Amino acid sequence: MKKMQPAAKTLERFAAIVGPDNAIFAPEAMQPYLREWRDRWFGKASAVLRPGSVEDVVKILAIAHETETAIVTQGGNTGLVGGQIPSETGEEVVVSLTRLNRIRAIDAQNNTITAEAGATLKSVQEAAEHAERLFPLSLAAEGSCTIGGNLATNAGGVGVLAYGNARALTLGLEVVLADGRLWNGLRGLRKDNTGYDLKDIFIGSEGTLGVITAAVLSLFPRPSDQATAFVAVDSVEAAVRLLDIASRVSGGRVTALELLPETGLEFITRHSPLRRPLSREAPWYVLVEISGFGEPGRLSEALEESLGKSLEQGLIADAVVARSQAQAQALWAIRETLPLVQKPEGGSIKHDLSLPLSKLAQFTSEAALVVERLVPGARPVPFGHIGDGNIHYNISQPVGADAGEFLAPWDEVSAAVFDLVQQLGGSISAEHGIGRLKREMMAKIKSPAEIEMMIGLKRLFDPKGILNPGKVLPDDA
Image (cartoon, rainbow, N blue to C red; front, side, top):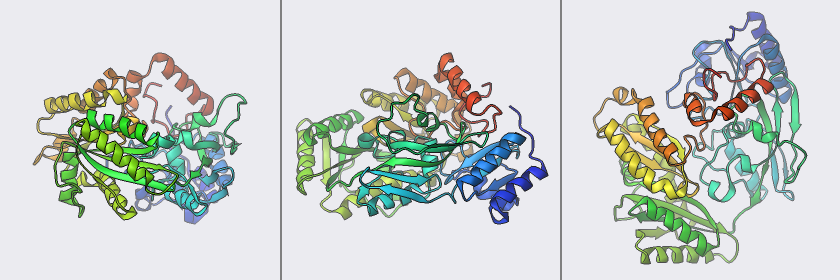
């Protein structure tokens, strides 16, 4: 649905709501809101608005609905599929929610925290820690990504294996609808069987159905014991089998299992001060963490027993177990640095995939052949949260290649990778969302019935098509 450039009078009405200091019109001042951090998308906008209250958002959406002004809601601008970036037409208005950043309430007895959409993930984690609780959602961008963005994309991260993704951690939402009505669904209930679960419709909708302004999130007791190891394995299959052994030995207390390839470790040692934790090189490495309660040190014993059993079965080649919190943090730093060190290696074609655990080894093996056929010399860097089947299948350019030439066939390479994923019963988006990057794939991966239901929801919640147009749904939707 084609949108028109907002009239000057409309922009003046928007500015009157947020005040002159929070209505940005100068092109140079808008730039931080219009470009994605990997420089894949550069948008334009008629204005950037920074509301300071839910009431401001209500007023903005009411005017936008009246005037049919397209709205792109943005949090920390850390998204990886372009869902938070406006189009190149300049017709849209960006609404940044970073000023809505309060922690409204913590109910330690109910194990819940109520946070506004602009609160950073890190601030929510710290507020939970202050209350001697744990908010387990954890991402590399947690210092800058916001709760609203996390919910809009149904973010995952390293703790999904034990705690679930953002949807699983959300009990209630506050949402401003496309016409400016406010839905207050901030209920901290774990059982509320009164009809349709509306909150789940908005979580993962990437700002196309409503604007999330606050959420009630689940908290958990902070584990009193934790054990971490960095393990060298010869295959992805061995990594998956290690998870099974560690889960059985620990009584289901594995909270993270992260995969790293040797290529990734080479990048880390080349572009960061971090060094190899093991003297022996291997094709693959696994970072495994077990958390729980009880006598300190018992989980280290369980982890060592798991590694011993894995060694007896020929699954692991070498391992180091952290003997202190500092050592554990040093091992985690290796995993957290991997996304950053790919940039100095040149162009990188990135994928966020999920597969059944039983198909991960087959996928990584066959995908490498697909990539070599299409781009000889390219270097696959598969890594990520394989404990829950999520793998970030990134592909770095061949050594010495031109980045622009390498990135040009991104769509062709991705289509081949996605075809393999679908053949193996996987998903082309595990935790990053659809945004602009993958929306044209939707008609290929969703049945006509699914597309019809999604379009029906869009028309119901946003009849004028003003919320984040051109995202998630295919062009002809």
